[in-house]
Length: 362
Image 1 (tube, rainbow, N blue to C red):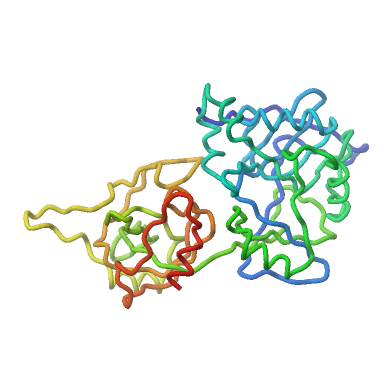
Image 2 (image 1 turned 135 degrees about the horizontal axis):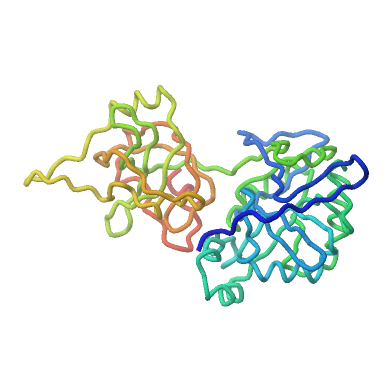
């Protein structure tokens, strides 16, 4: 079952000639940064591992819109029920949909909502969703606050959701860099991917990258089992790790390689060696199945060039690790000819902390 199409526009004006907000609304975005900036006018919020969603509270209904403008309403009856019961009509909220399991967010359970079909209500009952809000676009009664400073929007949001049920939470916010450092070192085990950095005096700019985001990353190793492009001119590297039974399992894909990285890697890669019977055996199918890519919006099989899995790569990864795979693309750093493929950390069992083996392999 795919996502619903876009709904009719939702519009209002705050005053004659004033700003008009129509649905779908492009949410305000964050540009990636390589370090956490500091400043007297900056505040920080945890970056949760979930689905971005705007919540429109109508006169008698609730509409949940994804970042891409799609209708998420049918898949989250537990959230629409909570919003309808507690949030005043006319309000528009911005936040993140998350599902908790065993003390951390579980992205796979979010995706399961879309494919649950007749089991949706059971899924919602057994794995309830939470809406972690962090901004307010329209206050109660349809008062647009897009032009208000973040500090005012935040204060209004806190007042609006004071006493709300746990399913409608306001995300933590801090100006203390030492507290942010704690988030990045201890909260990652709970599903925090990093931090979002915002200016207290900033207005809400739909579709603009007016915020910054820093992802918590760690350095580790993986084995290159294939590449997109060609062996002589690799574009991205497909990575794997051995499991406890000695099978090389696909674990993720890198961002596009820089030209010097391509040239260096091309000198190290080789096609799979044939067996004594001149049969080439590789642990992964070609093309790579769409389900392996982890892409939700446009899944499709991936053609690639298989390579002999003898080259170890040093990579930087974030905390989005589920079902033995890094869900986001990883950063390729360099080859590690000094490291044996058998020295690469084994693939993690379900439920293990994805950062635990980084410390062991550092």
